[in-house]
Length: 265
Image (tube, rainbow, N blue to C red; front, top):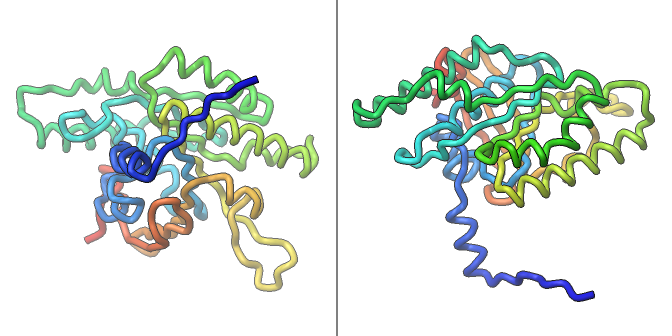
């Protein structure tokens, strides 16, 4: 059996990396921290944080940002939101989406209209409560993406919640999670889709200090290309880039406003 392999040189890789599009967060400082343009396509990004730090807010902003018109350097694409913990609210998403569209319209010629109804149709939502339903949908995901080829962002909010069910052992849970994520990562690379996963914080057992770490364990941390830790302080939020294939570790402040994610003053 013969297999054909595509071998790249460094110049090819540089051209691919620098020409690969990304999804902006609407915070220029946060985009620059992530690697100039935001969340890159073909990658798995984990957004960590305690409740109330803005994980879902950032995901909603990305679902709006993926629709930015191509004339403004955007993808003009669609998003899929997989809700495992009933975190999503349509009212809040519409607020962020319409504010983002209004900002785009101010930058465009006034004769170019962006329909709010068409924008809402570019957002796809599914509620997958329970491990069985979650796994079933992920197994059907390739067929779904064939039907909706313009989807360039998949959000899973949150990745840890379905695996809290006590019906499977830790070993079974780990094996199942890694198989699902390996398939999802391959899908992201092959179809050039950005996958953003929110994750919770938990106390690491055995440490007297009670240190907070990301749920799902240390081995899980190697599964994602990017790890972004969020924390909140009064009226500002902070994002810490803890892991990235393309950017150094860094921290940046941003704001969660009524219009969505914006730069801190």
